Image 1 (cartoon, rainbow, N blue to C red):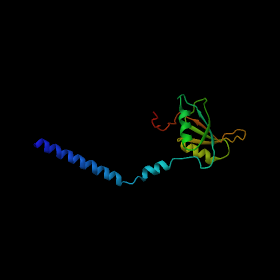
Image 2: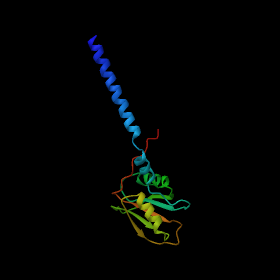
Image 3: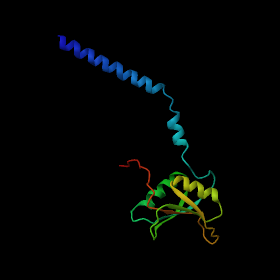
Image 4: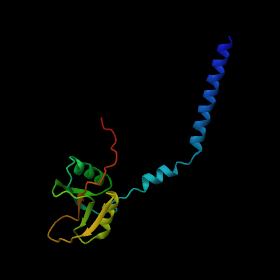
Length: 143
């Protein structure tokens, strides 16, 4: 009988502790999570920024992962490929004379450097050369 009472008291203690943890968590403001999600760099609204993504590394699939990331952030990736030679730091090329667009893409592809290389004969606005120091963010599991 005593073991049953001790077990019931222990179960009640765990229940009260769990309920208090839930209440404390609910009272905490969700603002840090929401601001972290809202503060992600994005393409400007109402503008179509055509992007070329080129993988310069030996790691397969980085251009595809960067394409997903850039498209999720509002960029229009129109070309994907692989080129050489291998570079260390990701470079974002401003091809259309809009440095703000290249800066926005560089913020998505952190760490990255921006360079201006205006080319009026092309239909691209920005080119992203993925370097070996770029690490793609974790992707959600899609079954």
